[in-house]
Image (tube, rainbow, N blue to C red; front, side, top):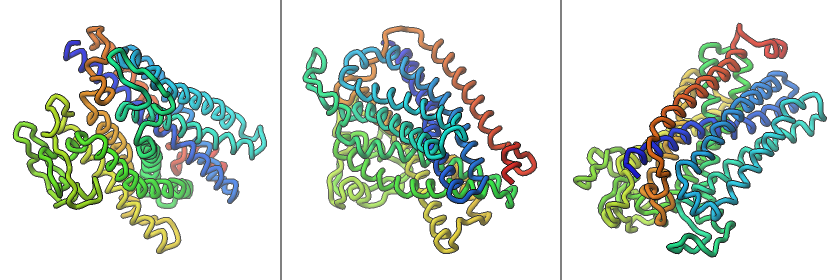
Length: 444
């Protein structure tokens, strides 16, 4: 395959995933926030929480529709752009794809019940349908992530020159490290969505401090945002230890480590130079990487030079994405810690302008961290599509001239993104003081 065609194939898949992951993550997390709002409304009788639940349900419906479209496109792209991958390993990894489809249809059924069954079915059944939407969305992300786990750490079959034999679909679905990576992914979905929601309502409260609806909405978003922000670094640390053990070349690229070392330092910042084998401008924390990777300050950490040069991932890109992920994750964890401390000290969620300003600034960071983490995973596995078994170049379609579909789909995604943004902005605008929609005004 020509290098330019491979580039377009990878770019199209990457662009599709980068778009899909944002709206899919919101579609996974909003149902949980919707159910939490519903529960609060039932417990307190406060109409604002009922309105918030309705707003979140509408947002879920919008994002579900776009996620369905972009997810369908991705399923076609897997077969059209990477036919050798699907042809060779489809039977090995088909089970989680099938279960993801089941979860998707389950979510669609219960979302319809939740949207159109309000005040038409018993309250308990209506709440149950919302819980099922949240669980089905999480299950869908769980099963899709298992496919990525397999690509990073293939298992459940015996490789032969003629293809996989002795296939065990269940063992392939639960490849080593599945627990850490699925937990990391699900937490990222909830964290990104909760931080975005908190940032939006913090922005409104900075402009309209007396907006009771947005203060209550913030009280729904903050607990999920704080809990996920503090759990994510812990799960991320477990994932990093798994990567250090099973994918040492990815860890070396993420840290810009070229030479194998005992007591390897942790590099903060810098930009790796593959020609000189150094990472200029990095701040090094002595023995930090050995401690984080193996919980031993004198542990040996393999460097890139221990691996064939043609098996190196794009070192600078992986390192930069990893630094962005860790940096944004640390900032969110710090803000969450401060917020919970103030919540404990004052027995109420903080509403000071400094804290609200912090949430406004950190609102987009969950999405940034999620995208950066996905790039670390995908770039870090290169040049393999199935690590150690099939190279990305060997998996791609032989069809030339992929520039036309790439730019076509890019325009389609930009249009969909603009429409979703417009619709979600309208949902928020209907809650602003002086511009309340009829349901918000009636609640007050």
